[in-house]
Image 1 (spheres, rainbow, N blue to C red):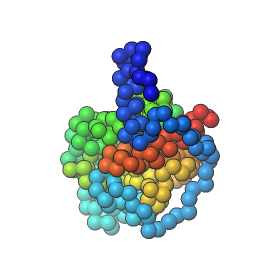
Image 2 (cartoon, protein in one colour):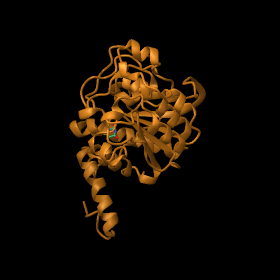
Image 3 (cartoon, rainbow, N blue to C red):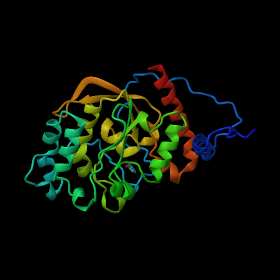
Length: 292
Ligand code: URA
């Protein structure tokens, strides 16, 4: 194969080399013809609820939610033995409901004292990327780098994520990124069901206010929490579904957004052969975007 970086400026050359590295890591042969999957239907029906989920190795540790997450009430959180939920201020649902803009939501989350994770985190991590982007990705929770920098997906898994999207022509201005949790779980442990349930009103409101054309849920926690399913990411990935936008009471509305579950990039860092499937998902996303 001739040198694909010949006659490029240094910036283009760097971007192309990163893309080629990602392709090579994904096991894609650069000279082989690309077989593109048929475009996914824009509105697939949600899969039947399954128990006995196939569990994917997670970002932090193997535990995954066994039950679909329900947004916590103070009573349910207390019943779950989650004593720290007692705090003076308003709950996440009320704070989220009172926010009519992304800036207001960010301020509301920063003022929330109900989540114990906030006490051990350095920063509240809200979002990164363009608020005008058609695409919104929701990951799991900030890690060490994200906690230090106050932005989601800025560490190793974020770099892989950026390369994956760059490979289908999606740059930093075409993507808006957030997480299920706004605070880093100590030591990057897996978030508990209660922590997820407690913070869910924030990300649901975040999605409603951002109103992307397409939602990507990265990893099992994100997919299971937002889609209210116990099915594992190994089965969910690559299957387009409808995400029902939630109202301020947390109830599903008639408004839906096509959502594509994908493997979490930190899982791909641990299991490089799975990048082949991730590449198929990227191609399905590219096809869907070009059909809009
Ligand atoms: N993993 C996530 O799920 N989110 C981040 O922001 C970083 C790593």
